[in-house]
Image (cartoon, rainbow, N blue to C red; front, top):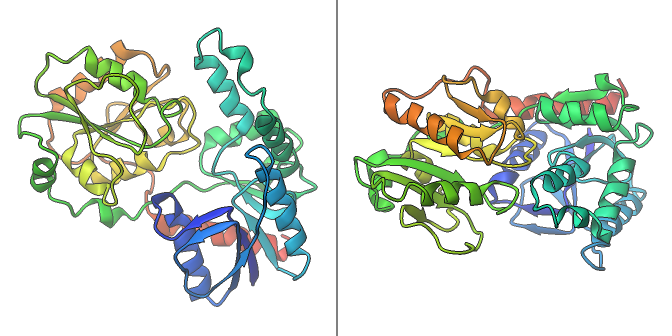
Length: 361
């Protein structure tokens, strides 16, 4: 199979790109000819032919210009399957890893201050993204869609009812499970200045507004007198305002598995996440997860078994009760998860969909 893969910015080292790395490796190992169309890339991927797609313009213009440039570049060669990880004009398979832009705007309005709500989504960037998204989800332009959660599948059914549901495939994110099971808890705690008696929450991610960090900081500020409750924050975001004394900032980490090993619970309260990898990473480590129903990865959570799901990310009273549940339980044994977390299954199922599309099945 001769495959064109579209990814606007490709990094060979980013955690979110591990999926692409494994997929590219699997394609090369099985003899498929793979071409990657990207605006920027870092590092190299063995057996992959890179095609540079250069575009210019403002932030509002670049996504559409990239889609147009890729569409033009694809006309110079014939491919058995075009697989896009971006909102583009025409493709055989689209992976909706970013969810729906229109749903993200709905969540932003829902949780924004009242005075800011009328302004959300009014810029040219958002208008272009919505128009591009509508083209991507037009069944005349896309043969099959891969989603990483049932939440996103439902959003597509609601907002794009003309797209046949039988052509939407749910393939959940996977992680390298072994990576998150071989870190010393004692060494990790010492590294971050944590004591044996500390009960440690961990937050991992960038995107201040979307991923709910302000609510966690507010919660910690309200529990600053609890000397053994700590929050470990792994982010590249710049903090706004005063950081509570019981919050430990690590900055971005190349070995984020150390943060999970040091922690007792992942606390991750997004207002919109199609299916966050951090949930799978924490569960692979064996620690429970407290997240929200606006996160597609909440489908991995069985309440009281491996975590809790909040209906409102700002419900700090319920957050406190959930934290107390896991604090009282102690760190007896790693939590169990009924659904597979393995990245190899994700790659295998993705390959099956690409082969189906190549055959026109």
